[in-house]
Length: 471
Image (cartoon, rainbow, N blue to C red; front, side):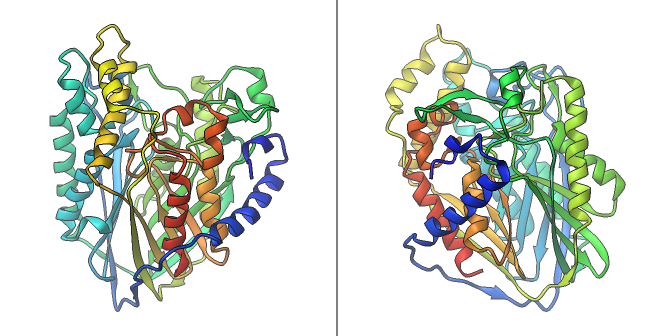
């Protein structure tokens, strides 16, 4: 089903049709079953942590091709929790950065794993994807440093300080754990935030990219298209005391950027406002499969728009939490699936390195290809990407990589309609965009910066089915 050609259909009808079609498509995947370890814990305990990851003055933002840090509108944080009592500790973390890619993502997970005394396969780390924020890839950093004239992608000493801060935060948190007895899920519709970014013409090709912000009247006039309008919340409790509330919504989280002012932007600001209301509960915000979703239908890029978007997200969080109904925890399971993505043959390492070395090219056309080269080398070295899921009672928290398209999230919900599925994407950012197969011939920006081939779609869809099939 070509979902983007249906952009001008009624959004709710379009989504229902997509869910029905996706349930059939994903169920037909042929997969070998993986081991499944359900736990009925005698006593679950939980520790929460948070630490500052605001970049210093002068640090590169969004990979070094926008204005570096000149000030801070609001700080950036890494927030998470450690769940104990269901086998080895499980660590869930979300970071107010653009991305953590390849070895940077692996190092961040390993640092938290070491502190929690667990293994890296039981750690998931995601980024919210704000753009006035670091975009970390230590492998790309090494490539551009060899050129001698390019700005840092991520300053190694700053990155090391963040890893150290993470270890200290988790170690400290584990000294003050609390029992976990109940879990709850809720959801509510978010109004006037998300819209599909890809506008497809009659010939089946992308004719316009409706980005995170736009002043074009046609971008505001066109319907939202295929989105997931629901903000989902999953909360853990000790009796009646809410300990953690994790919120999930799929949309690029930028109102405006490029002015050098660090910010957690409208999604982070909404989360922080809710945190101030409930200081005894740790609130986390995860960006879902928002690779082809942005706020451009409703956002003109003004400072006033950031305020409006923040309020709409905050309203969605509060409304979602209002539907929470705690239930005793009866089972917990953690599942992982490693995949080695198929490379997009459009990208040739030697040609990319020639462009990186060409000092006549703009910074963006030298720094950005370094991420491609880093990913090519990673895949050739056989270093996989780990998909994971946490299943608690009838709830599944699905952890996916990079800028995955919204279709993956909707497919996941469709394949197990009896369960409450919340998706966190923007995990390992190595692949950059992960479109669905039908998007590749349509063209457009996202396809142009997808380091994987279109065979990534069936591979990742199969991985999602594996993770959810025995929940």
